[in-house]
Image 1 (cartoon, rainbow, N blue to C red):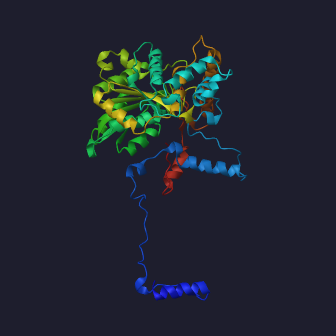
Image 2: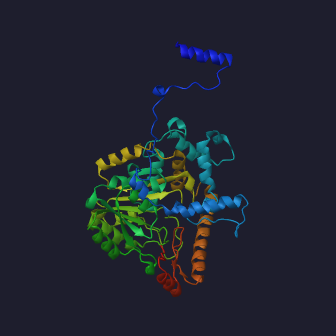
Image 3: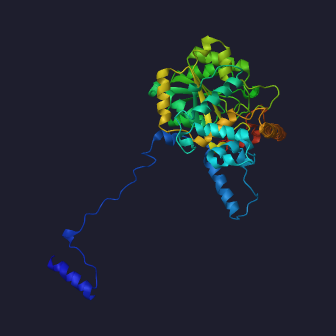
Length: 457
């Protein structure tokens, strides 16, 4: 040990060192440069930065801030915040369906299978689901496509819904809500750079998931406009206009349809669906049919027609060739179980090699939430007339749907009573998309005032 270090240690022991030991200049460590952030707005993925999702954007964040202030006792000219930005049924007071919750509860805590308070039909479904789970536990991973018996039930449900049109379990993919399925199939579809980038045709007004996913994937958003003056109908001539214009700067490959409509509330007629399928067949487009509101049809003049059923009934020239992915979810309908994140997609006419690639893509996220898969099973395999839970289930289902129909009519009527607002009939889904007329004097003032623009979306 060096003499200087020994003297310092001795001084510390004797308590007579009055200041810290300091190194000489030659021994001082080099000064490190200030470390900058690796991840900044400039260095991050530009596709993520370009994404917008108004459903949970700045307005919603501000609403949450106001809500917290109310909870803290800060005085406002109102007492509550009503969030109308998203179809979150239970958050707005809709009661869950008893049978669905019973089955999921039994799957989650199998000890309840011995409880006499639970009906036999709920126990039978829970046992069947658990038997298909690894270790008979909802906590185990499922196959990437989902629990096999639930996929079988989905296929049977589709076959019954479409009055005998065949459905195969191998074409069913259970998903984390419908959104996960839509995003997954878009990932498979999108390719190219520059003018060869994939164009994705979406309806305007649209559900912002589509524009956000298109931005994230660096695809090209191709807008086609619904006909507001004709109750937000879909016009094939408008599809042609959008397609041919888009061909100048991208390769349109995908056509998205939302039926019943979000956020416009229309229900497409069978003739319209036939025209859309024929258009997709002629133009070589992959169809995405977002059908999560298929139970939400309120107008007596309207009926839900699945794209799969219409495609099949148009004959083998179409049903054997047109590629179609359709989507359903536990989040809407009469269930409103958004938080379970249950859903499925059925994909038709997919090339076997692409099927393998899709399964590979889905395997990266291992599997959808198994509790959500169990909830989806109840949606597609509800109590039957001979089972003990049937009467309660039907009463609860009809109560929810009749309440939603009443609220849809009430919303439409109230909007149309307000001067300067016009709302089309709400045929289905859970939303209204009214037109707001700006008074002429307000328009004149905006035009006369430099830097002020009035925009309505």
